[in-house]
Image (cartoon, rainbow, N blue to C red):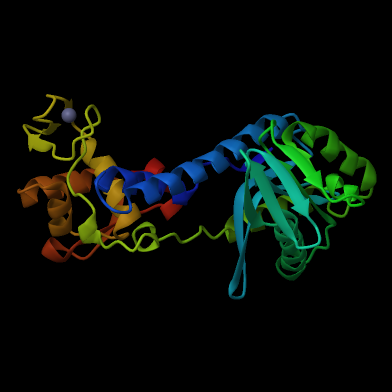
Length: 329
Ligand SMILES: [Zn+2]
């Protein structure tokens, strides 16, 4: 059963908003694009694992995607967590093309592709760290001691996995996605004793969901940008131009003639992702290139937003958490 559903990460949503609003001639444009495509590749890799995870018996496997937990000042993020009454399993996913060499001596991952070598942080070390932190976390906050296993899953089926001679035991931990169902069933045979009952596992599921802390990602700051670096305006869904005008109750694009009553919703999402999580009537007009305070007020009131204050001092904000803005507007 999927407890925390598979979604695009906040980083990807924010980078998409930024990509729309940074001019193609801007110095960081290609950096933004490459960061976005790197993260989209990771997302696609994780998505491909869903196919295998869905093959697991639903009632016995509780699946979380992208879970981020806090312990004091530290956070740890888990790509997939699978909880059962007998064990928990962490999946650290890697979608890297080429030949992957796990250098156990130096604790790093080297990718060889087209005659070039790139170094990456060792995902086995990352997964082991998550294993340790999750074990402590579950004991401290849930009062339960659950055996925790981990796999590094290479989601790209054509990637070749290698390691030093004599270190073949690493392959018990590093696998391709298609091996997942078999390996998870193998864990079922290894851990035969229940450490949680059905009620206990549901309680831990609730606790994990409630304790998820979305990652903070400052998309502008990441590229050394300030709000004045991005283009404002309402974007036309047909031609992509950022200067739709509000005419007779609809947004109208003078460039291509497209009409759209709700184009401001996507622009407001960009504002929340890139600028800040509150907006006043004046800020809304400035960002949407809208003149009338009355029209702005009506549009803001029609949206499913929370607010505080009254008249000119009214501040609107999304009711949902930052990860759910898209669905809530
Ligand atoms: Zn247009």
